[in-house]
Length: 364
Image (cartoon, rainbow, N blue to C red; front, side):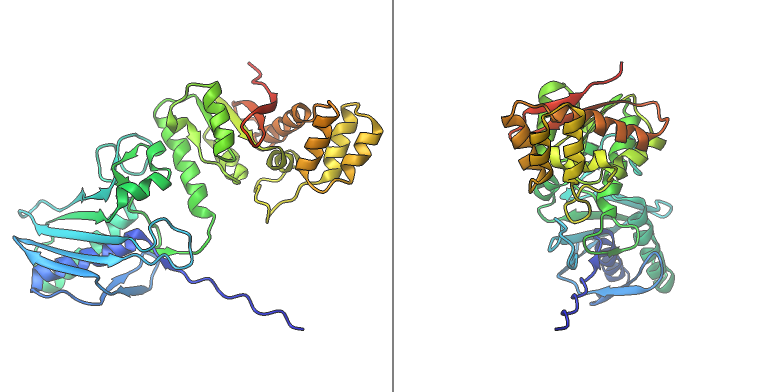
């Protein structure tokens, strides 16, 4: 029997692309008195797309257009969000000025592509909008000097599901996108967020950052240290993305906190800790127990266990500490990835209720 073909995941459009379409439609309405619907935009890396307008309005010297974001099959928190742009003409020579409307955040920390005090509208969306307005201005002979205010419906609430708060973006979401296209289930966006978190931490003078595999592991570190939110990098499964960037952009101290199974994979050398992309080697754990002088009966029992959790449970029930040796092995693996980067590393193994069951301390 032939296996069914996998259905290709549907791509979507970035918030920046939607904002560009809305801005172009609004400016064209100011220039000509009519909204283009659908509105076409050019994508940064070539090609084009078009958007239907969900809303349009004009009056008091302003034009506003809105587009509903379609993120395709990507699990994006902004999928279905209403992205609206209001445009008004400014005095000649003013250029294009960007404003954060309702639901769009403001940058408050250095280290991001946009300086503090500016609306969280990233460089590529700004370039896309500027180009779109300039293109219409050239055809209509309408000056391109405009104020562009971007809003995202319910953006302040949606932002709570993102890393914006930790990055120092307050009041709402960021307007993002480097290609205009959302490619579904890409790891790139998450890893890019980790990198920006490191940039912010370094730019604000933080010397101690935390890479945690999840909220339980993160909370364990919060109970141990009084650190700023910006110190906590939402690493998730992307240990490699965090460590390789820190190798080139070091900080003084790094605490890595995670569960027993995920850090077993990291100790084995895996850099992506997701269950679909790396597996626990139970033989590795059995050898670790043997190196720790555990009874051979226990070693063999663990070698034939079903899961890493079962190994941990068996060892704990027998009074054998396997978490501390694993923490030391994990630290060794982390140091290998970091190479000679001047970073002091601490590793915490955390169980499912948030208890630290093993650790490898800082060197200093």
